[in-house]
Length: 410
Image 1 (cartoon, rainbow, N blue to C red):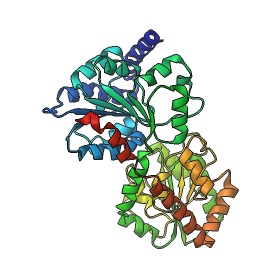
Image 2 (spheres, rainbow, N blue to C red):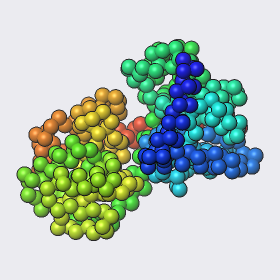
Image 3 (cartoon, helix red, strand yellow):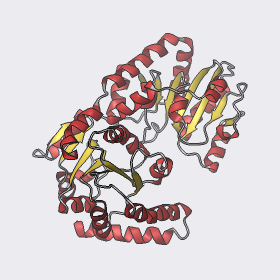
């Protein structure tokens, strides 16, 4: 299996370079990876211990942010390197990353992994959630670098861990620091002798901090202008079709909607404008006419602040299989609507059971939920309170995690 994986990753690297000649996205990704070695060659820890944190994309980076901030403030003053796999993470935060240096992680080939670890010389390495790269783990083990899987998330049916190859990869970690009890139970079942601990989910710490430092955008507030405001965050076509039908059936000047689609390409925004069968204002046009009912956020990086103006949030992805971040709006103590597919998100399941999040199956559910909120402000207040209290109750993961790895920083 190891030999097959090495061959596959090497072929993948060559294929990406070749396809990059004709595919702009792959060319951009490949060029970004070329810059990684230049960035890594120019690291200057100046005697500080290097802590390497690897994340897949933006969501995992956001989970890592509370840990990075805590490490940055730690008395040992470690040198922080963050690597990304996905462009949707790195390109968004590369100029504001909470670290001393950041770059793409070179593809997981044996040569790349060996060169990377020898060059970076990390004292410890933290992999977030389920970022598990075999050659990098082997290189770290050869160099006797302690590495940890933090905010680890396991669920039934993860194919990799049903085989000896996957279990061996997990076993290379010094410890598995799990974000929920279900993941902890599965880790203990897979590897009974491995140190597995419940550290909690650092996303709670991140959204708590964001909620405590609310800074609503004045232009968004001007657009809202006292109206009932629904914010659709990270939306896909399924959620947008629901609001389109609602707007066509309910001519209400006291209602407005802000849509922040998951993708913001020109073609995607044009598709969205076609779906919404009425006048749409784009954020990029710098016009927030309060006479219009629909504002589309056609850029990235604003969603948390946009949620701060919401009376109700509708988080996208739940009609597919990739529900987006419900904790951001929940931390703001507002009701949250989602699609029906949330089984692999235990925190969402808990909020549905508690009554702070409502899962919708179709348009009738959506229409009924909105009308109930509009007619019953107390219902909104109660659901929002449930969400806010749940998020605050689950904070503290960062300190638990830091307490565990602190001995390796000294």
